Image 1: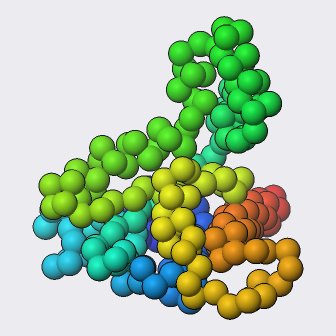
Image 2: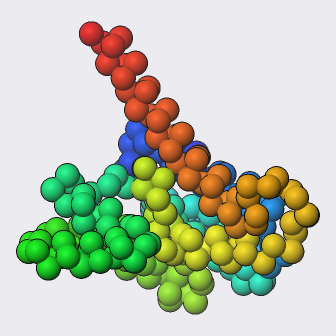
Length: 216
């Protein structure tokens, strides 16, 4: 565990949202993951993984998938700026109707900046893959998964692909384990992670509001 993370991480006061997601995913995999995947540790560092000898940068979680090493890096972002939010929301909604809305919005004359902001989650995932951790994993032939999430609860495609690997096999599930409304371990994992993100972000916002009142 990187004990300095809360003090050195660039996400500052939002580090607890990031760490909550990291820890919940680890618990979900440990307790309910398929037989193909196991959780190894959070924030592997030192002799196990490092970028350079003088920096603590590295992935957030280490797993074994079918015996092979798999490293995960979690990253939280806010949704897009207000002027492009309609495009962003269309991009993140997987219905045909909203896909049409996205096409119509783009055709209506969105500028290049708005076009980039349509997919901020994908942009962050790509930056992680192209970053120092992603490059080192490529060099060492280690599977690396950037898991970006929105503070409003959405997750990236690569994050969901990771969940599918971890939970879709369902060979550890017992009949009726999740009641009648949740039909699979994968669905349970998705719901739990979304709730974790939203609740942790709400705690962060409420904490800031209480602090401002004290200062006043």
